[in-house]
Length: 506
Image (cartoon, rainbow, N blue to C red):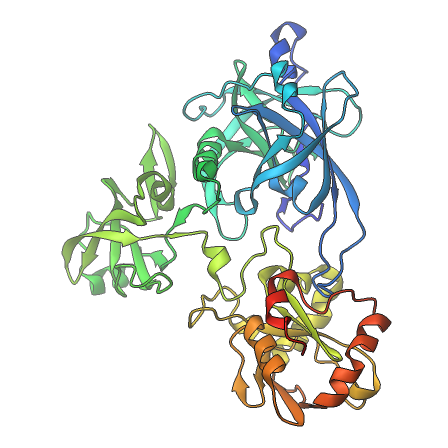
């Protein structure tokens, strides 16, 4: 899988740990029966050509049997998988599986087997309550590269933090003093034969730094999907900063013994969050926030204050204490679940991209995934200066929430060569502004405007500074549509989610 600049994505895991392999007498037989090899054939969408996919690739990792006759693994291993096979240790047997639930932002997935009798001989692992202590010894089970059999390695707990996983979602993670190699991703880490979590990634620039998703995060995920839907973790999305500077504290009239996080910009996604500009959140629940935005939990563990949101939030609110205009105020602060999916350029999180082909132009709903494609080392040097110079709003509004309900950025992803497009330059990555003068709200709205246009000609404009104006003869577009699709090997002119828009021919 693609390696990020700091963290290697899933399908990596513990192996070659510091110290010797665990003595045979400590390797519980029932543990080995509960750990499986997971093989997946991934068919990822080509976001630059969203009507097709990249060549399929096979990836391998690990999984662990949990309660409910299910298998837990990493989301990155099985996302966009067209086939998933589960193989128990020492059997050679390969069982077909499907994804039941997937949480891309916390890198967790639940698999369901076609043959549930497998679980009669492969029991779930017992999960240890609470967090381990720093310096606790642990064993990691899984299937790293270098062999076919189950591998068992040793490491220690180095630290526990509340940090970002993916797409802005934060969670607890356990750092372990062990090497990381491909294959153990999704495999369990155990202390005294009880699972403390599963392996998910590594720090790319360093040796012997690996990370485990702890049971607390796993339990939150399983509780979330118990109703059949993954809603995501509750998060504070107001823009905050520390309130450490002496002059800043004086302007806020903060007492010497009061610390906390300053609200610079309140959120407005789900209505008023409850905070005002220059409010200082001094405590979450009854836990005071220090100068660095940390709180003390579970003895000597000191973590980011946002950790308490996932423990205390109820019905979309979390209790906080606020210093406002020189006086303390108690608030029920609004929190947001899965904010990455609510942004004007959301994360796909395993979904297929939405697209529309109209004549020689192909359009797509812009996503964070799409913009990330331009950030790869091979293309960033060429594309980012162009996007910036062109004042492309995808750059300026990256991370923004919609300004109105249903807002999407719609981008042109291709201009196909054809007689009807002669004389026009490719507007690739340009953001659509309007059709016949009507502002485009989202990709569905674009489809409706193109479908319902009545004039002899249709005009399409773009927001970008140097983009051209496109004017097409509607009759010529109708006559050329099938030819353009066939010439470019496009089976469907629109993604499944837009099929109902074009029940009437465009």
